[in-house]
Length: 389
Ligand code: APR
Ligand code: PHB
Image (cartoon, rainbow, N blue to C red; front, side, top):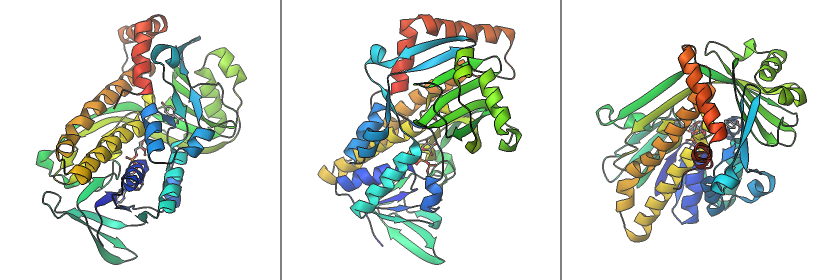
């Protein structure tokens, strides 16, 4: 088997890259370890930057997102009983679009099917060979049979636990990591959202977030100890705790109902440098992770895909190697800014076990500054809607 670009991983990064390359006539094959149903069963965040929306247009997969996505012109920040709005339109003249990552992935798979793109699901033991030479290839097992895919480039879009990043020799890689001493307990419920826009809440009982997917589908989170499991959080306990962490008027109007999905995610910041080794290029979670507080996971993956598809396009259209050579530095420069923003928002809004009286006063002062300073609000808005590519 032969293709131009072998894409490892059929999550949002791999699918979006595959679609953008197909639009430019650059053929590619996606190797995905799981079934499509498994990939589509994962519930993830759903806030899209304008840059991401633009890439979906370019990839020709934006029709349903335009119909069903919600345009949000701001977010609410609560601190105890106080709540203030960050008005994106007024501050930076751009909104975000709320549309679930699961739906993005579904739309990308549908478009790939329609375009006749090849996706090999349940590809096991994927291994990358010769990435540091000019004839790379990927081996894998499918239905018990050993297969080989020859290619010109490899895109490692296989997430944090994938095979791509460890292919880069350890002595050439540098990893930067920060783990946070808590997780997020998330619940999906078929109830109307608590608010028209997202509410990020910092309370003395810990962080909470009110988000949404559709008119009658809400997504809520509460900060919880890392040692908790979803079994520790029966629905009643979750709703009581969520209400305790929201300003009274919001808690009073919150409509509760049975949860249809429940999970706990740890919070972590992680970056592995460089994002390129020879003809292997990493995108998305394969190379970096952010805590979910700024909703940057999917959006950072998208900026990598933007730089990589543009660089591959320059190479195939004009034989121009400069963009490919500059990919890692270019992508990382934007990634680190999203890392900083996600780390900052996490610190701003969570309760940390070791927080001293002084730390709490500083946190309260920072929230008060944000509530009253247009300059501070503009900095948040500019980062939340997404820095330019
Ligand atoms: N071989 C083939 N496929 C693999 C392998 C492997 N060895 N390891 C992992 N995969 C697949 C996973 O099954 C998954 O479908 O790669 C895909 C990676 O997808 P994501 O983890 O979603 O990562 P990415 O596409 O970079 O998306 C980034 O989406 O998942 C969120 O939190 C993430 O929001 C971030 C964004
Ligand atoms: C979500 O809707 O799941 C969501 C929204 C915003 C975040 C994180 C998650 O910051």
